[in-house]
Length: 180
Image 1 (cartoon, rainbow, N blue to C red):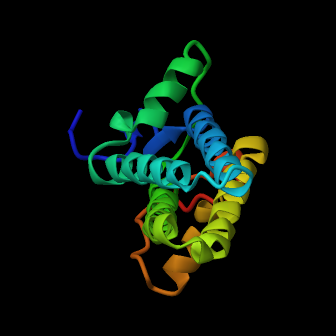
Image 2 (tube, helix red, strand yellow):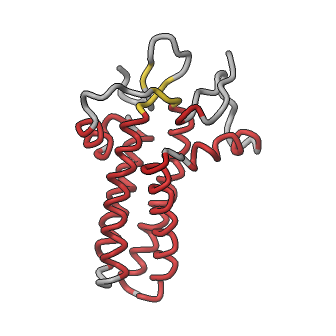
């Protein structure tokens, strides 16, 4: 298995896949961490928690998309939590796009939270981004709706990213699979 890849090959499928259960578990772990950071920032005015959690999430996404998904801390924890359950393979290419968006969002939150440490007037901007992040993680964890995966076809249509040879299935088979 290569060191630098996103997803795994499954016999009979012409594209790389990830396990939907693991991805939802990972999103759930990130949701809990984001909620803890939000409560610390909003209720306790402990802004260092926002910076710490956003740095962790940024690192988690960076490891996932830059090295290999299997080394991302939330994926490791989620795999342990869902061990023994039958994997549900879904397309990796859309999930990688979604993780790139997660990396961008967590980087923005981290960067602004550094400013927040010195100036509380940045709180509303950071809070808005955190709420958006929490909403996205909630949708994925609870309903299996990956907003980044839903934006993936739009990014192809806008020619921001190349169209894959085969468009893999989405969570819950919510998108069409094009034959190769």
